[in-house]
Length: 205
Image (cartoon, rainbow, N blue to C red; front, top):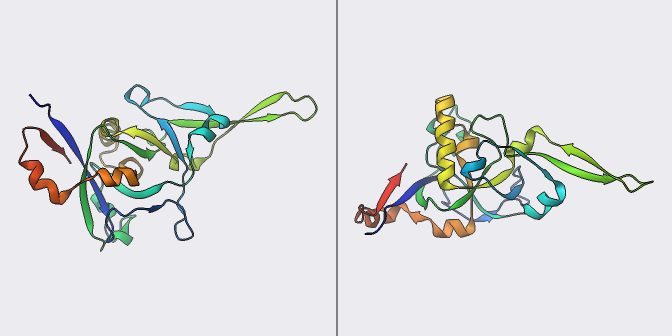
């Protein structure tokens, strides 16, 4: 018997749809670095300090893809008084991702206080002796960095966040989809065909 496969709704407000473009360019000046640090269920409430030599290896300099909302998000953001008012008249695009996809999410816990990657430790040698000294470095903007998280774990963080705040903040609900993931999206227009196999598929969101 075929197992049930869960599909999670992805939403993007943009007239161009789920378009692929560089994260940074002369036109786009987005904030936040990308780290291939995987947040799984076991470390969903943990913060780790990493050496810069390790984060340098993890860093993706300039991925291509687009922003989107995954699962539940605060619709009031897309209003005249919302923080995404510039998207008010943009087209709403809907598609679906599988639970086993690993997406980029903001570097912040469900409580909006702690981070998955905390301090990044720089090692600097003393000129006269060569002895290495460690200097932990962090910034209030580090929560804008991106880390990796399976969609199934993303849903756990979203549920916990909503139970704490009674709403979904943008930094919890947004993801950055890579060009490979965009190509794997199941379009909303294919929903009819998915529904024909409801014994095997269940939609979330």
